[in-house]
Image (cartoon, rainbow, N blue to C red; front, top):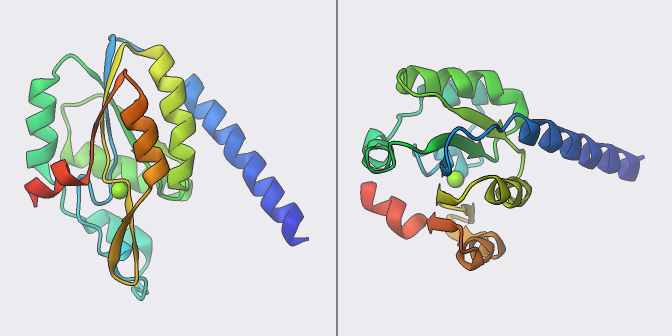
Length: 175
Ligand SMILES: [Mg+2]
């Protein structure tokens, strides 16, 4: 029963990724992708699993880091804009509202992929659709209060010529 549930979950995930990717219609040759948690905002959840509060209330109140966003957006004015986060897709509406509230002047796509490893499917599809991608994502998680990194995803980005990856060492300068 447990295995069946996992299998179905994986299938649903793949279907959602396919549907998301179909929505991407490039308007420019260039794209900028931002992660959300620990990239555009500091999310206390990622360091403290004890927080019992409803996620929805936490996501609503997070402080948007305008510095990092506008510094890059100014430089890459003509780039399409995508937000790609590992949050659970059930928080898509609240996340979209939060982004709209903070960025009223920007057109963007938002994809919530449930787990960081699913980001690879998006990146590999997007790199075929665009000539160049700026990708801003801490790609990190916490274990016992220690920051760890999704090394295989980082490796993938660093090996892809079309992707310029800006990770935690870049992001942390804006803290
Ligand atoms: Mg993150």
